[in-house]
Image 1 (spheres, chains in turn red, blue):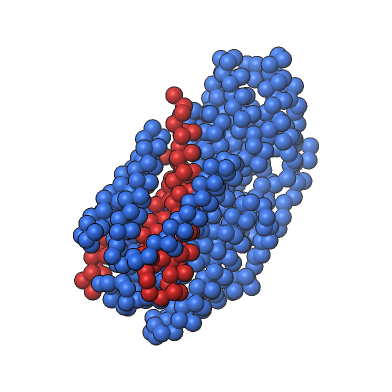
Image 2: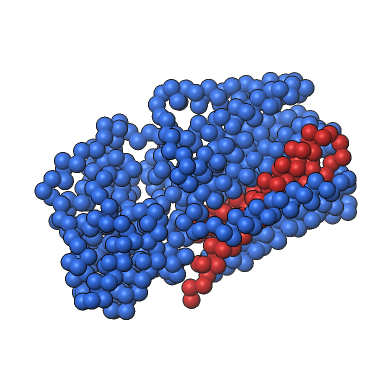
Length: 93
Length: 461
């Protein structure tokens, strides 16, 4: 129960941090914001790696493997495409 | 590596994500911000690989290799005009991955140390539902934006099925939490969530896409946060809630820019008047059309020109032609501005990305609140493939179905040049009163060809 409360605290505080930062992002960067934040949501790869690397339970391992593939597409593709877009915004003077 | 060291690495990664998002508050620092985010991800992944629970690396290596190749090729080869589809698809992958991790955790609850079983099951259900619905919903959104899916059912029966699938999903979720050995309930829950995601997005219309993409973006984050609760992992909770907040804010901005509630958008509901269909009688005898030769003469004396791009510019891929036209006007001493409505195009910031691709400096792009007072000093406003967002009825006619929606006040410009292929109504299905204004000239043409012809005629002046 104590651990859950700590997690909920972290969750609530992170939501506030998110609101504070995101409201300051100009509308011109809203597409890169979506693709960039989407890449960050690929953090679920952390859980995917543990599941795919676990020795026990073949079902968990297969699910973990599929999760690693999807999360990696998300992370690699997401950060790359965001970089491509942002480079276009930057090259102007 | 000890658990403390891994958790410290996770904390560092979370800080890097926050700094990365902070970098996006200005185009000058944005590239570095994105890089910081990527470094945070690398750090978190490497730290995880040192986890004692991981005993074999074959599946991991293969999974990363496959995912990296797909992500790399996709991100490098995709055209900027296909960006809405790509963002939609990636949202889905994030949500799907989170749901899969929740599923894996359900099959090995003992492996997660320090998290009470009930927390694993409850947040596992949440993650599986949100993640599965995000995956299927995003794939439908991708298919619609890609143009491979045109089916758009509506109506009460559809509403009943959507609500039914959600309720049945919740019921199965409760079943599973009460009796965690009932894996069938967990599987059924995922299947219903997939159906729910499909039905919810399939009824959303084209111009409402910015809302649904922002919403799916938010959900991909929430799914990750829920998975964080499953694993008792703070870096997932932090990152997931950052993304959830980000998508939620964008969803709100989009809804506000259309003066519609999220609920109306999800129902594909435009109000009764719109459903009756458009009549074009209001246009009879009140439309003035023009040709590129004629229109070029206006630009001979025009000093301030404002371009109002819409989805039509994206479809015609006219952004480079617009840029050439702007260069020409500027070389003749004029000034070109761009007025961007928040919901122009198919996703938040769609027009900005296309214009950036065509090398338009971002400081020439004005948002709605900044540009509206400036239309009075504008000599010519060129409306390029936008429609409902410039309809004065939204401002002046309380009876109109779109009344109250914030619009760009292009009708306040000296001359409005409306470039459009025909008089067909926009997404809202209602006549656009702007077409009938005395200061409006219609040029019936494809956006790209119209801009190229216009540039040629101006050069020949």
